[in-house]
Image (cartoon, rainbow, N blue to C red):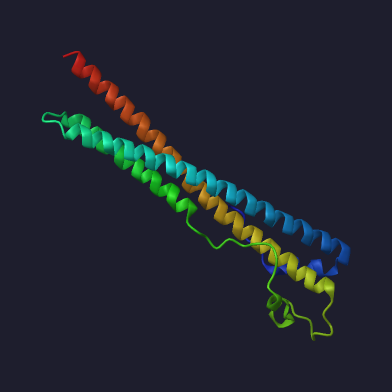
Length: 189
């Protein structure tokens, strides 16, 4: 993500908003976090499906190679090509696997101990001086920070899954071209 994370100082003016506006900002922030969680779960499911497909394909190639080399006479070029496909699929599966590893994702809600005014970014002079609008402005920043951090994680996972799929497609296309070229050479000899 190219956006720089804002500091709490950017949210100080939120303390001046009426409580109903702050409540709406918090409500929308929590909805955004919920949407991020739903999206991240869907992307993880898709990544696991891609990973399963890649592993299944690699096992099929490995089985074909084992069958091929068990013959008394086998073509070393085709075995080498099969090993190349196996390595490419293993790399692709590795990227997909990295994209679904557990991350420090942030969720909606708060722990009760997070409400101690001493831990606020700009604590009031005393607990009695605290107001709901001050707490809501703190919560706005916490929500912003969680949304930002989740976006970073989701962007990184998307790059890993995209790389996985690109490696798989390139491996299949390259090996198909090599196989077709080799077979043309063998048949035209």
